[in-house]
Length: 116
Length: 115
Image (cartoon, rainbow over all chains, first blue to last red; front, top):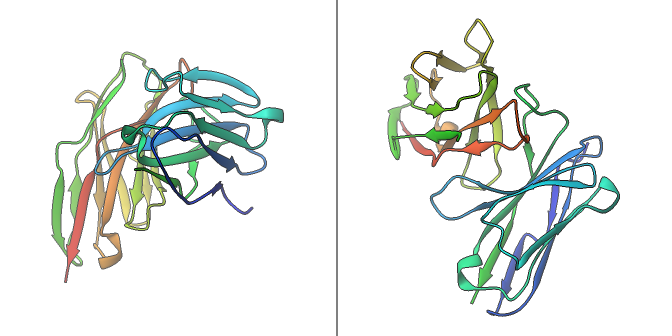
């Protein structure tokens, strides 16, 4: 079990460019989540997959954001035409259970995006 | 709508003392789970403890315990015998049984442990 891995760990880009982040969850976990965390705040939910199905998207996720999880394994989060307000840590998490059960989320180390 | 409130932006505690970090929540779902996570300066989110809404007893995990008061909708984290390595951000989170499985997080409390 190598944990949740995210790539790249750091990305600096110019405004207007597209960026893509990748997340590899723990292999037996069928649930995958993307969160965004800005300085001094808690993680904000962006989107959630159960296997390959994207079951929920936050209103925070504008049409410039798209996430995929082909084949229910790794996931990508793409941000098109980046804006300075997109600068944040993008966290990926996975879990094997949900609802009110324990089945805590296991987080990756995050991908920090800086938009100049 | 579900909501988590952490009213303490920062807390200080002396090494070896106990500290309580406050968390209140709001939900209309009778079935839910409450979680606490630790985020050190390195950035990774570390799961600490879980409490289910139907659990009869307060959860404990080593030096961590959760003071669950259902009627007051509070789920405070108690850290006993604080250590310097406990200095970090602490986040309370909730997941409802109905709907999707996302966790909703509070804004966090920064704990600083001093010698």
